[in-house]
Image 1 (tube, rainbow, N blue to C red):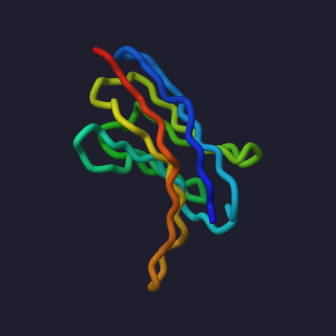
Image 2 (cartoon, rainbow, N blue to C red; image 1 turned 135 degrees about the horizontal axis):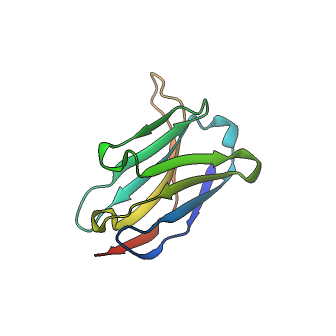
Image 3 (cartoon, one colour; image 1 turned 90 degrees about the horizontal axis):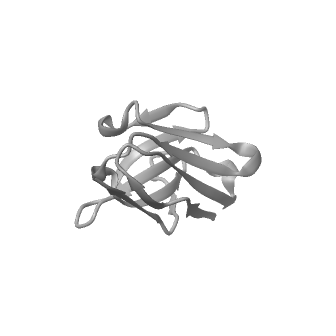
Length: 120
């Protein structure tokens, strides 16, 4: 079991920055990939950024050069640094922890989400 608690959401104006945090606990040794997902109102949840246990990162095209995912293992926290915010970035951001993909599938856990609102 992995428990995730997000924080750091809030209201910003376009062009400003925000840092989201995801505090993790539980069987963290089993996690292969940490991710941040974005769900805009009325839309599906989509992967924004991910980082593996080997520090390999991946970003969706819309946030490349603006967002950065990183983690502090000593604090059991995964961060999403969001710069040059755009109103399209508004929505709920969820932290995700996923195990390695095997023939049997994989496990994943979600946090409760944190709301980001960007005004124009």
